[in-house]
Amino acid sequence: MAGQDRPRKRWRAPVTVQRRARQLRGELTRAERELWRRLRDQQLEGYRFRRQHAVDRFIVDFFCPRARLVVEIDGDSHAEQKDYDAERTAWLEQHRQYRVVRFMNTEVHENIEAVLERIAAELKAGPHPGPPPFAGKTRTGEGT
Image 1 (tube, rainbow, N blue to C red):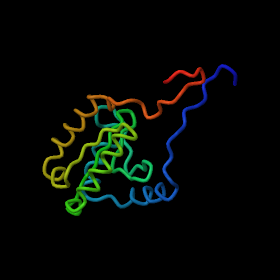
Image 2 (cartoon, rainbow, N blue to C red):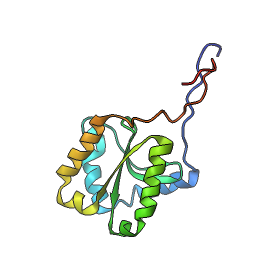
Image 3 (cartoon, rainbow, N blue to C red):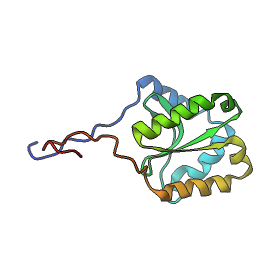
C-alpha cells in the first residue's frame, strides 16, 4: 500500500462498556425516550444521533458524531453526582474534544421544544474548537 495513508484508528470502548450500553438502550428513562423520539431518524436539522453510546469507559445518553456533541439527561439522582458529572464532562471535552450539554429530566418533560432549540444551536455551532483527537506524526514526519 505504498503511497496510501493508513486508515485512521477507531476509538473503541471496552467490550463490557459496549455490552452495558446495548443493555441500556432497552432501559431508557421517560425523559430519554421523549427526547429520543425527537432526535432519531435525523429529525433535528438532519443530524444523526446515537443513544446510550459507549465512549471509552463512559456511556453517554446521546451522541452526534458529525457535530462531536454529547447530550446528557440528568435525573434526580444526578444531584449527588455533580462532581462525577463535572469530571466526566471535562474528560470528554479534553480527551475527545466533544462538547457536552446537559438537561434535567424536568426540562425535557416541561419544555422539550426549548431543549431541542438548544441542541439545534449547539449543532449549528459546529464541532469542538479544540485540536483533533490525534495530533501525532504522519508518515512524512509532519504533524497532522
